Amino acid sequence: MNNEKVMDMTRGPVLSQMAKFALPVLFGMLCQRIYNFADTYIVGRFLGDEALAAVSIAGTAMYMLFSIMMGVTTGVSVVISQYYGAQQEDQIRHTFVAGAYVAAGMTALITVGGMLTVNPLLRILRTSEALLPAAGAYLMVIYAGSCGTMLYNFSSSVLRALGNSLVPLLFLIVSSVLNVFLDIVFVAWIPMGTAGAAFATVLAQMISGILCMWYAWRILPFLRIRKTEWKLDFYLAGQVLRYGLPTGLQMSIISISDMTLQAVINTYGTTMIVAYGVCMKVEGLGFQLADAIGSSLGTFTGQNVGAGDFGRVRKGVRSAYVMNGVCYGIFCPVTFVCARPIMEAFTQTPEAIRFGVEYMRIFTGFFIAGGILVVYHNILRASGDVSVTVLMGVSEVVTRIGCALLFPRLFGYRGLWFVSPLTWICAALVGAVRYYSGTWEKKAAENSALGRIKSDV
Image (cartoon, rainbow, N blue to C red):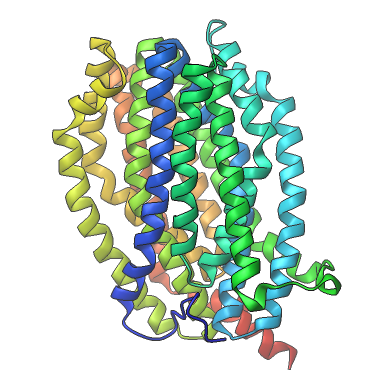
């Protein structure tokens, strides 16, 4: 299955190979973050602080349902990467088909479920009556266009499972540039309000997804699915769900804790919501580093588990530690120093700027814990030890909700700034205990593609 369009990560130097894979993923995520910042910047500049607050609330609300989508595509990526490591080309194709069916079904559920629950969800978040129409309009468009988001995430997850992280980046760059242009068109030129910003995002993701899928079918010979192969393999669909649903559940329950924190923030008024919303953009940018490293480690682990090389997996984890140290050794000091200019780029309200600077300068001191947390999520998930990732999610929920309700009473609003950092530390400790126990190796031996192949012989 030698093909210059994919990367075999079961041999060769570990650190350089992981870095080579992670860099395009990082740049792709940065492109996504750029058009998220473009949404925030253009909405704030042309529609004002109230619209900016509405988009911030909507972003928190939509993450819960979209986490199911990300879980499914993660399941596809894990199974395909294992079969690639085991050199099972036919099974890769069958998994692609099974994953497509699962993705289509989940997209339908997300679209219908999301559109039906927009207002109840926003009210649970204690969204004020003034912000409710703008936040609702944004969410309705995002949910209606969820097929575009799924298409890109599915096609890019397949390519990354095969070691190709460059092509999703190239198409995402095109999408990001288009998104910024469409933001200006639908917000500044055509006064569509917050719905215009959502429509720009949906349309850009749809185009990116179509291009990525076209590439997968056209360029990679073993993904050219014949008509007779478009039959649902229930076993492989089950495998995709087996890895994907716990991941989606873990991300969903984390989003519940995020919504709890957002609900507490919302009680402090529009100024606090704006500050928190901008900080979430910066925090999300910082997590792009961890997610890129984690994506690289996930693919690396999946392929090497498929090949049965657990010693190489451990080398991958150590390389991920090094990459996190280097990345956050640069990002955190820069963010600390530039906190005020960052806030001033999005809002001119002095109080919002003060709140945002305070929070940014606190969470930068704890970001390395968040990066290590992502490492454990990816090594455990890709090796088949998915149940513990749910437990890590539960620990995040308990910590974040408990601290979000308790800390403001003890320390005032500043207590809210320590909720997420403490959550990262607690969840990372759970992951560390599980990883160093060695249980993941037993799970990997039982559940890997190679293990399944041997059990069938």
